Image (cartoon, rainbow, N blue to C red; front, side, top):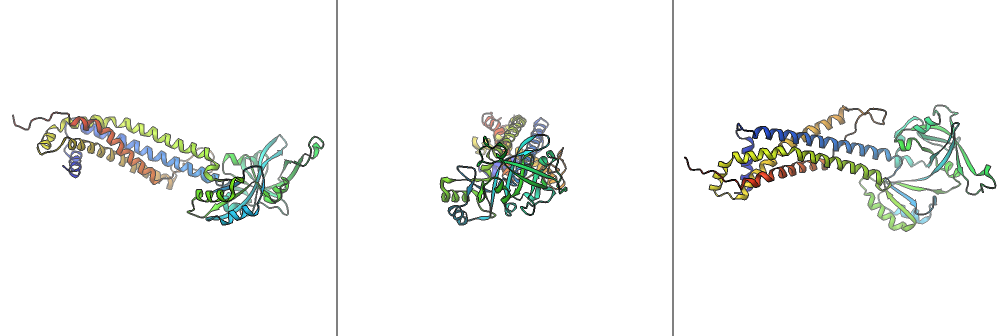
Amino acid sequence: MNSILVWQIALRYLRGKRSANAVPILSRISMVAIAVGSCAMIILLSVFNGFEYLVSDLYKAFYPEIKITAAKGKFFGEDAMLAAAIHNAKGIQTVTRVIEDNVLINSEDNQFIAKLKGIDADYDKVNNYKQYVTEGRDTVTALPEPTAVLGIQLMSQLSLDPDNVFSQVVLFYPDASVNAALSPESAFRSQKLRADGAFQAQDDFDSKYILASLPVVQQLFNAEGKYSSIELKLNDGVNADDVKETLKTSLGAAFTVETQFEQNKTMYLVMRSEKWAIYGILFLVLLIASFNMVGALSLLVMEKQKDMAILKAMGAQRGTIRSIFMAEGVLWALMGGLTGLFIGLLICLGQIKFNWISLPGSYVIDAFPVHIEMPDVLLIIATIILIGIMASWYPAVRSIRVEAPSLRSN
């Protein structure tokens, strides 16, 4: 008996006349339970995808696709070897040079540390920070007066106003060329910056980052012509790992080359671990929900004993009988699971289009982010099929052990 006939019989049992026993009720309950589980699974996975894409997009303001830093030391100069390696690497669209270090801010109330980042004219082409500027101007200048764009929390903490031309912040940086013990009053270099704009991206950045013109920051750090990193934007479709390997081969051990994932490896691994933890929990929920299916299929096996006797009389093997009930279990799981998956996809699409569920509090977005990925859909379908196979295994094995009644009339 071929597999086509097995599925035809399984479909016949699925659509056939319902008996008066508990099989129809239990089968429907199991289908509804699997539908709810698969619906929750696609919604939660899509929400996690949405948050991952959101956080990744926010981090792009300060973490480029490729970042080159010195393996030793804080700052480095761009020599001919480094310039040639970047020029010869294929797939690079834009290059920006950055210098970054901690600075001291002496406010009226207290002193605290901020992170000052000197950027050039191409920085936004690589990291696109301007889309997060919410107040004031989105550019920094060196002349006629040095200006800066600050994180909105830092701006508030310093009581600065980008609309006030007299709103300024004074930064201090240790001068390595001065012996602090001999001349403590000259131990720090200082730079006054006009607060010209504020950005709101992510708490880690909003509370400590200051963006200023590259030459101004280099002068404050006493590092003219030097950088802390060179950051790269790649052409669309270019694999960052391939570019990284090309640069590493050219630059050797003198420089460290990192992709965006490697720059935030812990954050990405935590987010992905949380997503798979949710999948594991929902898989267990689906597995528990399938217990009703085990009972319903066991009752179906008892109900269809005469049918099995007819099939055996027609030459059906035990494996064929077992396959029929396993196929029946898979059909039940698919009917419930695909229904729930379809409903979940509709809910996700509705959230994307209409923002039904909003985020409480003040965030850069108004509603829960949702992003549907086809691998997640395929994973859920595979999970549904696996649940159907696991739930139907015991009743199917039991079906070949049950003695079929005689077909002879009494």
